[in-house]
Image (cartoon, rainbow, N blue to C red; front, side, top):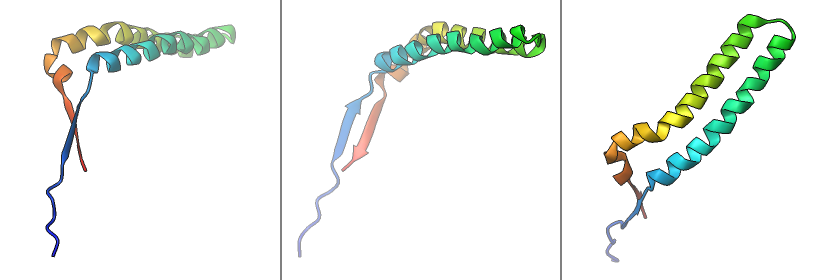
Length: 86
């Protein structure tokens, strides 16, 4: 009978700085795109939906700006590892 080898562990460090950089690059243009429905709603005279769209756009923009700074506080996240069993 053949003996089975134990599974090997492949550990790869996740570079959170890179992930945060790309998330920020996605969130900031998304905030600008979120303003388009607000402009259209104002054009049709609907002020209540326009205000809601503006709140979402401002929140997305603020999250994009503050997201990297919040993750710097959590230093443990920068040392996370992904383990894949082969």
